[in-house]
Image (cartoon, rainbow, N blue to C red; front, top):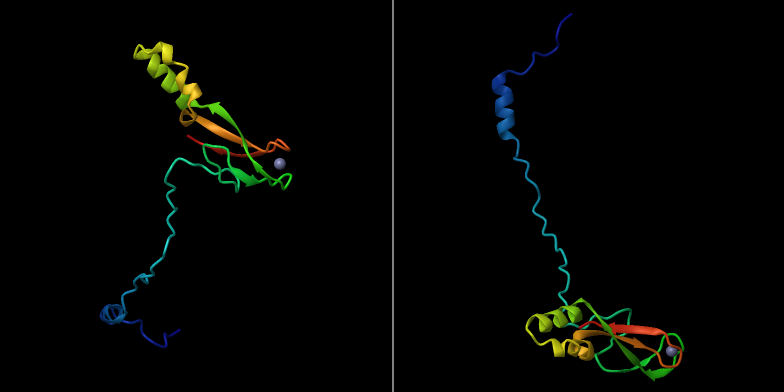
Length: 122
Ligand SMILES: [Zn+2]
């Protein structure tokens, strides 16, 4: 049993390794789209853009152009303001945040079909 060729010597392998091009990761510029920061306090629910006041909108339920009916809904912020006023000794004014639209969420409904349209988040 004979070997047709002798195995390469250490020097041959070393030289071969040195001649190999260095494998590097290709530099690929990957553009990652950053999420758009939404400024302001208006949160749009669904596709309806509603404001703090009743707004004229095309109801998607009954397809009438209506002026929305609004309802104030107290939030955690409303209660927090009431507690703050109470702690500061202004307890006669504790009800004020519940009457101020800017301290409540405003739910908009269609006056014709009573469908929920959207909310203004304070
Ligand atoms: Zn409607």
